[in-house]
Length: 110
View 1 (cartoon, one colour):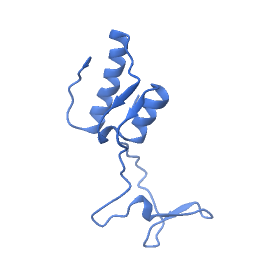
View 2 (cartoon, rainbow, N blue to C red; view 1 turned 180 degrees about the vertical axis):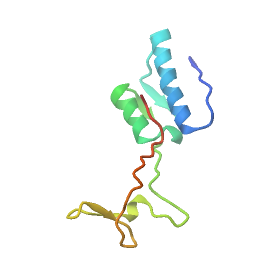
View 3 (cartoon, one colour; view 1 turned 120 degrees about the horizontal axis):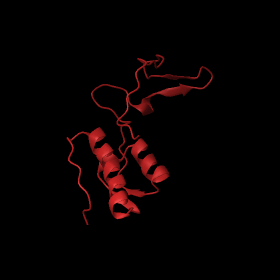
């Protein structure tokens, strides 16, 4: 049963934000709240899954978006080793993992 629609560009951030809007609007308009939500991999990010389960108490039925593996010559998460004594990560080339200071997020749920 379709109870709400929100048109968005084909971007994960926009689609996830629209999902939150649709769930809130459906609950307000029809006093309906789903127990389960099915979606494709684009919705399987940790933040969205956490929001669904912890804040909305909705059981997700969707694949988890695994972004740890890389192709094209870049290292994946699994390639780095944590040095507990120094509290740093070391890449396969033996160099310390550093940051640009920027935080990248797939989307933000407010």
